[in-house]
Image 1 (cartoon, rainbow, N blue to C red):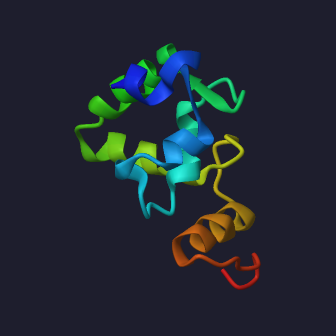
Image 2 (cartoon, one colour):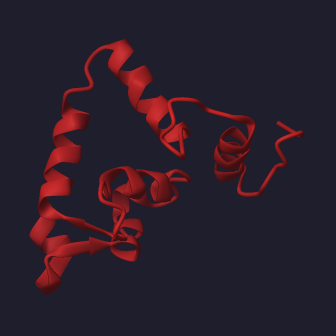
Length: 103
């Protein structure tokens, strides 16, 4: 499946990822891409893809699910979700931006 998505260049771009049927209409598609793109170079290579899918497969209990969801919201990876991060994520859900004070 990776090769079919990536094509000849052997990596998945942000646009290719967003065009996947599984990501259609998903307000978190960009954030999921960022989590898959572990070296933050703007593309997903096969090893990143395999590692991310392996991590998702291992999410079987509620504690692991909470940790994964937390990682989605913790945009800067500092171990905390602050008002700015929460406002960005709520903005993704509603399709518009909110200020930190509105959250």
